[in-house]
Image 1 (cartoon, rainbow, N blue to C red):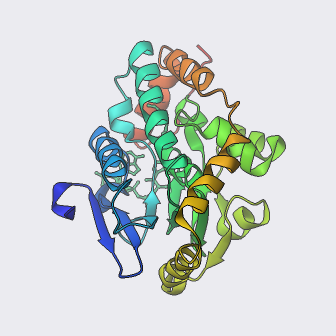
Image 2 (image 1 turned 135 degrees about the vertical axis):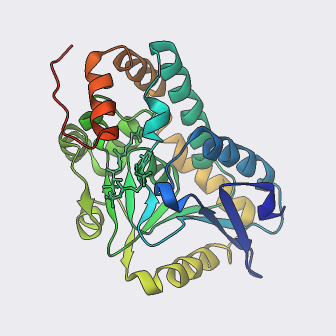
Image 3 (image 1 turned 180 degrees about the vertical axis):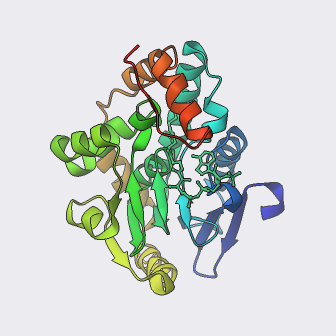
Length: 261
Ligand code: CO8
């Protein structure tokens, strides 16, 4: 498959079957609009049985961001039903990543916010550069995480830390993310890709069927997640004035004035 098949994704392979997928929309900090999500969906379906990919690294284009979230402009006009549907559609794409048959590693090279943090959490392993900032700021928009973050974050860091991160909406730095187990390793930006490729190559020395079954077995521990609940609640929030105020405040570059209705 050629990278030119995609507008917002770039896919590179090395000779050891490690592929690097770059989300390539740097002028919007790689925010996940519908096209990026659709392309992710297509790409994961296509490479599932592609021999050139034994393991996949996902990273963001540019110096600043892994992914700064769902595209806030696109969220602005969502109705309750559309919000719930979009949330469920994104969840299903991220589920495809989590249950991928080969190791998927997020290389968090800057901001991983909202949907970006949720994308990283859907990957099997996370490596952060030392300048990474990870957070779920959706409540500052009058929303909640809607791509699985309310479920995967407590699985990764425990309920208490997850509550703190989601309820404050404040991002945490790479060293704190490492301390609480949200990322596996922290590396200086210049070394991070090489380090992550080596980690993937270590995995690929093992039997590919064993890797696939190990992923499936570990994922089965977390099979009781309430993604449907998250999508329903996300949709309900799209019906509130607080949601409209939060999104408008971001787009108008001002602080939100929430009224609780
Ligand atoms: N969506 C759309 N555009 C974005 C986003 C985004 N999430 N993040 C950044 N951009 C755009 C900016 O609008 C700006 O565009 P322009 O140049 O046209 O004005 C460009 O990217 C560069 O960004 P900034 O100028 O803001 O860069 P700064 O370095 O000043 O700030 C920040 C960087 C702090 C990352 C800032 O851009 C920011 O706060 N971004 C938004 C972060 C955020 O709130 N993310 C969560 C979004 S909500 C979400 O992800 C919900 C997921 C669940 C969805 C469920 C179903 C629908």
